[in-house]
Length: 328
Image (cartoon, rainbow, N blue to C red; front, top):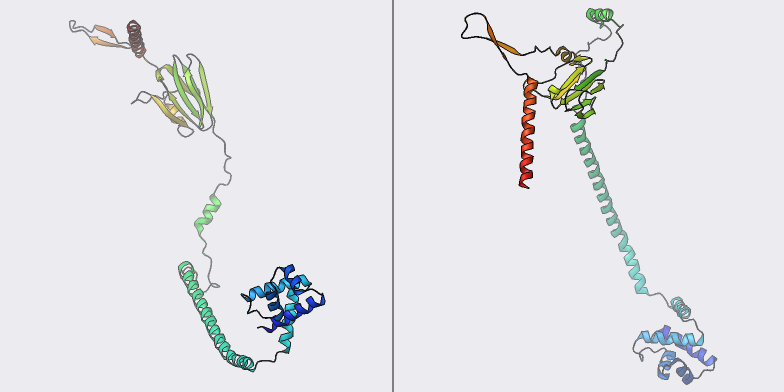
């Protein structure tokens, strides 16, 4: 039986009697049996299933009577703590603990201090080792020598060494140089006698990429460089800065990606087209005649051979188309 429960039960009983409430009426109001109410008012929690039931029933009684349960229990606890004498055993145990604690705490403090010192020393050593590694890796080879070999020992007595060649170069150099004059532009003119095609790049840009119309002139201007390709060179006349030139490759007989710039311009201008000797004939001496009379044999020119080939190709194409139409 707890003293707090007894004191609380007495207060509940006094307040119930002060309000002239019968025990049976109070039991029906709270729906708690009269036996349990008597146990609460007597402070005997052993007759109840547990202390929890005692606290719950006591709280219900206090709320029904208008008593603040929590404040009342706190006040009872304070009252009993002030009136109860101090326990000697507890005081002795506390004093013993206090007497033991200073030595334990001092030992722990010493261990902590030693650990801190060890950590600090380890950190300092680690930083020093890292610094030395960085120094040897990056800065050792870059340190200058104590004294260069070319510097004399006594700088005050050293005399300047004048180089006469440098003075002569400085005096003989002609500072009145001519101003820069930009080169003249490159002009390319194409004239086709028959249908052909050409591709021309002027200073890196495509200036001409098409089929050439016969007897029409195509003029392309560039500041620095030109690249030209021609489909059928014999049908196209090419002029460079007003001079007729021959750009045909003697091996391939084609004009493919020929590059003309300000450096090799003169070399192309030197390759002028020579006049052809026409008609093309060869004099062969006669076998029957012993005199100097000759028989002339006419050899067809290159243009006539090309026209003959074109006519043969066209006839073959027409025959193929006729055969297809007959088959359909």
